[in-house]
Image 1 (cartoon, one colour):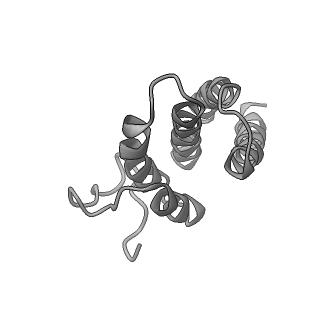
Image 2: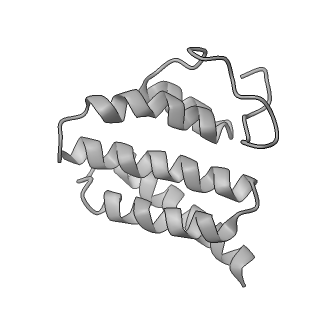
Length: 119
């Protein structure tokens, strides 16, 4: 994470294959503000999750959280709000657990930030 976070339309994408796939890698990227990179790390985990499972719903939700936060960085608050609604729908099917609790708190932060700009 020595380069700045990728923001579409502002800077170059990281080289193909430079982002390690995995849940923990995505969390580290996300927590450091590398939202596009977090999405890239989580996508293979989402793809490997069993269809219609709570795990797949959770991965879809946190990918949407990364996307929503990226939209905030891009000053696209309406899009962030729309994406937050998608994340909420996925979280409703994600079951329970520490990561689900974390995602719900992140969703609340995303929704609040998107609302601040919409008013």
